[in-house]
Length: 393
View (spheres, rainbow, N blue to C red):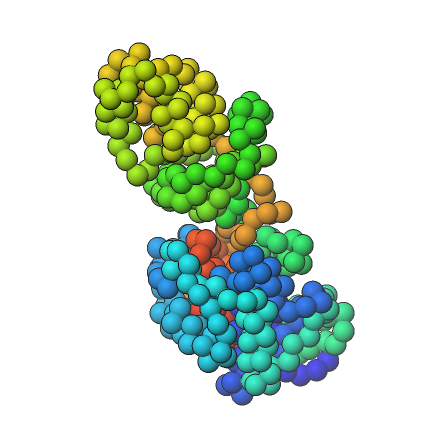
């Protein structure tokens, strides 16, 4: 057994950030990961260009059972701190819509930056190493048994992520450790994930696969206006992924297919100006012909617009702007970008990320019950929580 100060389980965004920060404090640190490469999820993210943070970050961009928990860490290491680090390593990046920041070239640059920081801080990173057991010793230290060396340490940091991205090596290890030490878990589920449709709905909409339109989706008091993509299994696209953070099985979502106008007012004008025009053709100018025709046939409103009374046309507008749909479910962890739920933040110190019940045991990143929106927010939580723990382990 090697004696060391800190063992960090997980060589991802939060784990590597924590390792570098602890190392700079003079702590003797080792990072262990069962994958062959460090930062696999970073490498896969953002289409290979890593949406590493966002220009605007607040607690409102996160789902957490204890939303105030997030504030402290986000203030102590915010998006500007990480941007400064990226610039210090001369990594070129660009800004996209909604303040999202991406690498110009490759996600590899972010992983290389983190590994360089660990090297400078003399924190060692060992990949291809699985954890066999973690035990608390009578003297208050921990014993960590691995497939390679064993360690006795003062602090253990669980940075093993959630259940999403199984092909990147995701496991439920962090949740197992939490249970082992008696910590409460908030039920986990796939998040930032496409919706699937019930068989009848799927039969109707499957031919529309590949069509993308701008729409606003509402669910549980939250609304997102971005693209919605029809797929061969249901719905995807940024607006769908965002609202999936708030959706629960059996609930309906409300879709506004014309978020930019008062559809009833516009249709009444069209009724006066070109009464012989088919409603599907008028709507198709915005929705695409296939989508407009499918919906008009489904809602039995496929006729010239002049044949509608004023009240009938208002009812049609309501269908298109308040389309209620109950998804069958989601695509699950296979395609989910993150995991909702995890280690209950009420069990942890918001300042240090340390367990209140088990001194020396820390949790950072996605393994916790903190789930960010699409747009770089989950990475920012990884940086912030890893930084916070790194000051104390």
